[in-house]
Image (cartoon, rainbow, N blue to C red; front, side):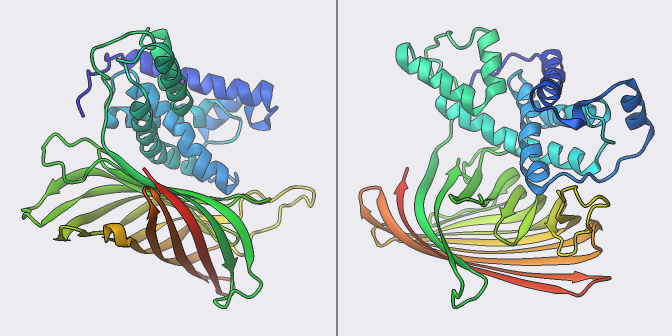
Length: 430
């Protein structure tokens, strides 16, 4: 975890956040010919005069692209010596500037919240991933590929290293924020259906990565936000791309009295969820109280348990009754409701080493509509997975996932949906 602190340059960080906005605006204006980029003094005055509203951008833009955009602001802070919370304030400032003066659409409250909270989470993960690649003690061809890879992972940090001469500076140690990373890459075939008997099922290849960064039981009071986080990212490789992200990280934590055979931690966690399936949409950022426990049942058997519950600050859920646009030639971008609510999650991992690993997961989301079709959306997710090692780091496995969604509407008939998925995979541990 040892790292020489970045030089503190707060005003450079502010300037870069402004520069990011100008760059993204210019890309929209001159590269993509985006209607939103046609700004002038009148549009700025209009945005500063009227209150925030809810925008109509599509689900991927608002709940995937905006957290990534927020991560750029965030890393302008981290690359210039700011810590997690200070970089969060910079993320909020960059998003507020964008909403107020950098696009002609009126400012959106959903964009401000999800760009800030999602940007902090995504940005810190990206910062730590780039730290795993960068090595200030490397030279020659190794140094070149490490700097290039670090730039691709974290362009804002790569830019700062370039202008500050850090790409060629050689130090006695790697001088990066490091933590152990354990994970598995799965190459799988999915069978998905709306019926439990898999009638009318669809098959597609799938690529997935599951990893854990750091150790929640580090036994020190010098804990920093996201010293420990987990990430599960999965994507279908088909004509219509579907993917999901299930992740959480430790913001504040305290270890309880541990014994030789067990460890326990309670804390405050941030979650980022993005579910984009054939028929179910759910995304948002949450803050949860929770606990993690580890039990060493024998020298070769370990059980890990996680339980979290808390508030989804800003989220989105499926809207089954999308209002048609006033002009028939227009496309409906927003097919979801904005909402807030609560989530609860339980994860269990039973590691039997050479006899394989069982993973069980249950997650419950309940969102109350803030804008859209008034009502309540409830989604339950159940997942069970078994992986058995074959040879060295290679393994094979099977997974079952079930989604059950129940949307209760105030002015429309209620809607129930189910989605069942079987996954057969080969995998590689790292």
